[in-house]
Amino acid sequence: MFVDEVIIKVKAGDGGNGCMAFRREKYVPKGGPSGGDGGRGGDVVLVASEHHNTLLHFRFNPEHTAERGRHGEGSNRTGRNGRDVEAPVPVGTIAWDWETGEILHDFTFPGDRYTIANGGRGGRGNQHFATSTHQAPTRHEPGSPGQEKRIRLELKLLADVGLVGFPNAGKSTLISRISAAKPKIADYPFTTLEPNLGVVQLDDLRSFVVADIPGIIEGAHEGHGLGIQFLRHVERTKLLLHLVDVSEMSGREPKTDFDIILNELASFSEELSGKPMFVVATKLDVAQDVNRLRALERRAKKHGMPLFKMSAVTGKGLKELLRAVDAKLIEIRAAEQPPPPPAPPMVRPHDRETEEPQPEE
Image (cartoon, rainbow, N blue to C red; front, top):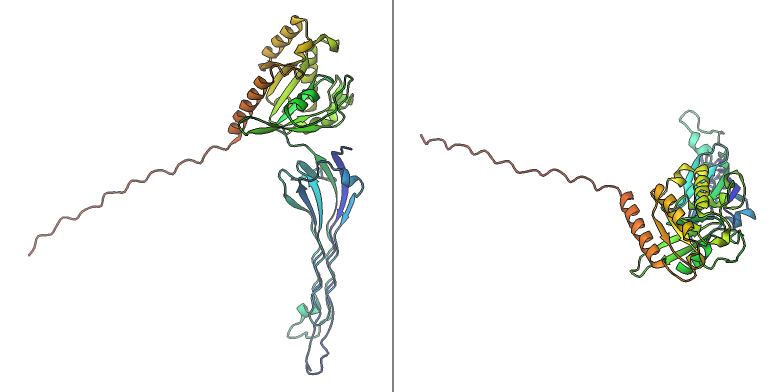
């Protein structure tokens, strides 16, 4: 089961109370106050893990509470700090504050840690309140409470390339041919019910990650179909491959499908619709009407998008597509690199002024 959004409750540990005590040893006639401090409460920490690819484990454990700090004791003994609680999240998870809607942290690499709730501070014992005029204080502090929050976790898969298109446009077949991913493939709509990730390994040891999401239909931004709820998983991608079925089997016009998908992407997010996009005409092995393909070519040219023709079944056009995708990703990554800092100005040494020799007297 693929779960990409959950709401959890986190509660950090409360701080321990400070102690009020006085020394009563036999050979310490003026012992004075000896109340120790309370221990600090434990934190709740989220940790990005490569071993999780869904938020399903939070469905069965939505509350995470850290241990409270121990109270201080006599003889100036400080209470033990509470144990932290670590909760693993998949890489690509975003933590939101449920009440304010603020983004707290974005987990983008394995091992990334973020303290989502801080433990309370331990209270001070009465040893801290002794003065020259008040040598037997009875004052001591309670521990402060730990933070308590409701957190919304949202998972956005990390991939370089995202596949979008109508159901049965050939997305799952394509990702199964170019990577080791094994999605379900069938001749009925909405075969893909959850996103799939595949790693494409090129001949020169370079690679990139492809994300396949369920098909998008007209009216998806209004809640129709499945694809719109998974579009968040291609928001992080650098390049979109828009797959369009040009065969007669779909019963639809390719240029119309092209326009509908573009409209749905724009309705979901302007940033998503503005990403670089390649148009991919699929199922060439069963396409017979050349006019359908030509109409799609004109529509793609009008939007300034390159078009590639391929058949995932026969493999025709796959190598050309992968080479173009790899070249585009290299170009995008190079553009994302910050410009190198300017070189420091060259300082030329000044000629030393030579003093004229003074005549001897």
